[in-house]
Image (cartoon, rainbow, N blue to C red):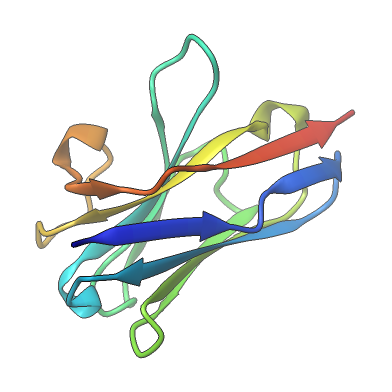
Length: 124
């Protein structure tokens, strides 16, 4: 059974940093494109970042480019999201997700597995 478990969320002041982690189990981790999405109440799930299977290619939403960094450790079956220079508008529930497709996708419909999410709150 595939499980994705996020951690690292919390409360941070604007301008601060957080590092989200996602632990995967029940999967051949290196076969999956991994991504992070976020969602706030009443809004659709929004693409944040994704990384290809080898870790050699990444993609970011324009709103986080230059501030967030996605990385993965295939040996540990972990994916990370380093978030710097956080803004109040970054506050959301952040979800880790996995896709069996070869290319990086930005639509949540193209991802196969999801974690339960971790809350990120940014105070101004």
